[in-house]
Image (cartoon, rainbow, N blue to C red; front, side, top):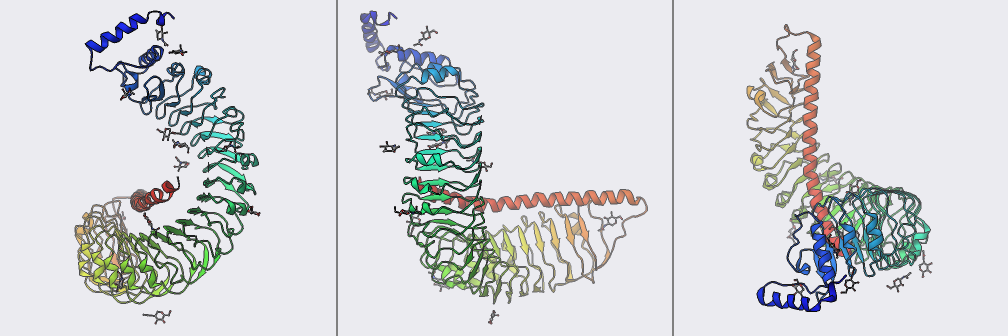
Length: 638
Ligand SMILES: *[C@@H]1O[C@H](CO)[C@@H](O)[C@H](O)[C@H]1NC(C)=O
Ligand SMILES: *[C@@H]1O[C@H](CO)[C@@H](O)[C@H](O)[C@H]1NC(C)=O
Ligand SMILES: *[C@@H]1O[C@H](CO)[C@@H](O)[C@H](O)[C@H]1NC(C)=O
Ligand SMILES: *[C@@H]1O[C@H](CO)[C@@H](O)[C@H](O)[C@H]1NC(C)=O
Ligand SMILES: *[C@@H]1O[C@H](CO)[C@@H](O)[C@H](O)[C@H]1NC(C)=O
Ligand SMILES: *[C@@H]1O[C@H](CO)[C@@H](O)[C@H](O)[C@H]1NC(C)=O
Ligand SMILES: *[C@@H]1O[C@H](CO)[C@@H](O)[C@H](O)[C@H]1NC(C)=O
Ligand SMILES: *[C@@H]1O[C@H](CO)[C@@H](O)[C@H](O)[C@H]1NC(C)=O
Ligand SMILES: *[C@@H]1O[C@H](CO)[C@@H](O)[C@H](O)[C@H]1NC(C)=O
Ligand SMILES: *[C@@H]1O[C@H](CO)[C@@H](O)[C@H](O)[C@H]1NC(C)=O
Ligand SMILES: *[C@@H]1O[C@H](CO)[C@@H](O)[C@H](O)[C@H]1NC(C)=O
Ligand SMILES: *[C@@H]1O[C@H](CO)[C@@H](O)[C@H](O)[C@H]1NC(C)=O
């Protein structure tokens, strides 16, 4: 009121501060803003580090270059429990940015909408990561608001006209809420919207044609909703679109060919829907990333699909795509997943030559024939090579030993023959080696025991002969060793201690007494069935602390009494000479079957826990590579 009536007092104050408190900075803000900021600070919990005479120096407060007005307030990540302070903020008429993300705000006071709506220059409101509930407030005013972020809250209900009055709105982010009903189509009368992020809600119905009026849209993310019906056929009208994400909905129909015309489109993801028909030719002409996995797409892969030179990621896995693999591949290709389709023919030998960034190659679960091209050895970035479940034949090329970044080599369920090349031992990062269910012969090369990181080794179901390499104990990180269904024989060497969880030597030609597995403290499953082991069950087996399943079936030469194992060990001894003489007299059959039931349940439970643990490890591998994927592919497209 009378604040400005006494300029001399202000002047004296300035002089006083200048001479007596020289090091202390004082505010250049108009007095009413300084006062509002001080009042605001009093309304906030004491944990907010706002003190000192110059609000422009407070953490999270930004001022214009002359320090003559407050333009930004960020109170992000303070766990603020109450939004009562918000209307006060609206007294800062010069405010342009307000960020109250990452707090525990549960409502927006009416006073905030009416008062802040009057601020002429307010451009950004960030309420993301709070606990806001209820429906979206109706925004009046806010003429300059360009960016509204209310993502990661618990809001719900339909969206009608609430934001249509935001005539400057360029970015709307309502990701991860509970909004439902049809997708909103009134997104600012002046149609200047550029970013529309509505993922992780429960919107249903079709993608409305009205969205195509927002011709400035560059980013649409509708992932993880309940959208159905087809994509508007003329979506190609959105000529500025760079990112289109429609994954995890129930969309049907064909992929519209008009998408091919969007020259700016860099990332198109529509996985986990019910799209049918074939993949439009030319779809990847401008793309860096295409994800159409988990749909019902059919037909052949267009011959030009993989060749555009900017292309980095293609995922068409889990469709019913047939025909052969394209012969020309982008030199920038980073991730190619074509697994679980009906692709046939050979893996073209020259397609992958010089594709130095190829990190993920998954062609598993198709009907590919012919041999594994030695040229794959030139894809030196490969971290995962998954060709499992095909009809590949011929020998394993020794050039695979050049793939020194390989973490997963999955070739199981094919018709591969010949020996395991010693060069496999040159893969220092390998975590999983699965060559099971092929026709590999010869002995297990001792070089394989150089794979110091190996967690999973699956060689079962081949024609491997000879004995287990004596140095197998070097695989000190091994969790699972599957050597069953081969022609292995001879002395069983010491096994890697500590980590080994599952050891399967079943259906081989092993003979003699059960060897010492002493010290395998993590071993849960030991399968020695279908061999010619003889003699008694060694006593130390009963003290293996983690054992839940001991499978000795079909070793006719095993004899003697089964020692008393703890209740959670399930011993299978069908087809042996073993006898169970455990005192039968002092228990009736009822409690016995009960006990067996419990012990089986316990062992199943433990097996499940182990399985989850193992799955976790595999996920870790996948996650670390996906992280790489996001760093390289998503961030560069942003
Ligand atoms: C604050 O002071 C400025 C002049 O310094 C004036 O333009 C503005 O209207 C005042 N605001 C309020 C809320 O009084
Ligand atoms: C600051 O708070 C005081 C006391 O509540 C009040 O009298 C004054 O008007 C407030 N000033 C502003 C600028 O809001
Ligand atoms: C504005 O205030 C900040 C924080 O106190 C200070 O670092 C900066 O030098 C000031 N700028 C001007 C032009 O006074
Ligand atoms: C809002 O805040 C969150 C969390 O601090 C941040 O990740 C996000 O980028 C912000 N949104 C906008 C539009 O700046
Ligand atoms: C919401 O979307 C905007 C626009 O793309 C983005 O800048 C912002 O970071 C997003 N918010 C969060 C919390 O990710
Ligand atoms: C789209 O953006 C351009 C350039 O930023 C702008 O001139 C135009 O008014 C915007 N709106 C529409 C509807 O095209
Ligand atoms: C969206 O929800 C799905 C599952 O409902 C979840 O897996 C995903 O992480 C969520 N996305 C984000 C960005 O939180
Ligand atoms: C793509 O653009 C060309 C030229 O503008 C046009 O003739 C053609 O019909 C468009 N194709 C689709 C599928 O929209
Ligand atoms: C391979 O990726 C790296 C970054 O990961 C990039 O710098 C390089 O240019 C890419 N090479 C090709 C041929 O795309
Ligand atoms: C690839 O492997 C082969 C056979 O193991 C070897 O002769 C060749 O030198 C390797 N090439 C490179 C580039 O390492
Ligand atoms: C592998 O199988 C093919 C037939 O598929 C046969 O011609 C070849 O001799 C076999 N090679 C070895 C080493 O057994
Ligand atoms: C042996 O018999 C006892 C009692 O009949 C039973 O509890 C135990 O589970 C049996 N052991 C095996 C290995 O079947």
